[in-house]
Length: 267
Image (cartoon, rainbow, N blue to C red):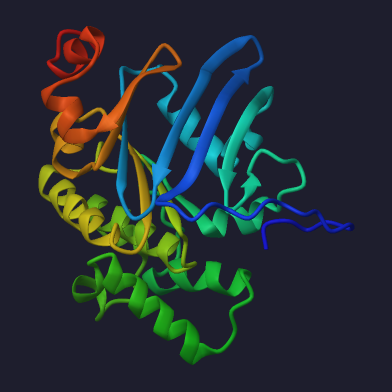
């Protein structure tokens, strides 16, 4: 459960539809900086939603708000609704630890723990209360397999995760997030710090993962968004200028500003 309350709070039953997260009138402030302005978009179940736009336009701020990572930033304030499973995730009563198990996150720069490949996945499992070496071993193997990394590391699980290449480290971070069985995975430019071959592997991985997990990805790579995203939201100066199915967005955008950005005229 995401809520740990002394008194039981009754939330409305979620509607049976293909939207897993509904964002309504979201505003994010960092002291006097209004970083995200009145954003309302759906995150669809078992699909890839790409967030595109120039640097500083609010994409990462929006992404971090979904699983309350902005709580860690001094002076940050969020208003609006992020509805998930009938609950507003901005509710202060939310158990953010439980939330981040269900809505995981992978960052731009790979950040494996300075421990073995095995312990990078086993440690979060132990902290989350999973016990039994056999069960943990099963989840470690399954997560590495899901992240398309098992064949590359199965004979060196006791080696340091820092001995892996950048692309392998990023897939290990994805495996670590998948081990906790999230329903949504947030990815903040997950391929920008790695080589093109590793980027292609992660794109293929994401296309496979969307069969079981809803994915939201921030990317500056228009070709990447066009290749893998089902829906795309174009952010500009904190606002969503346009949100649509990706093929529509990239072939027939509704606004000239969207067309200009996609075609590289600014950004």
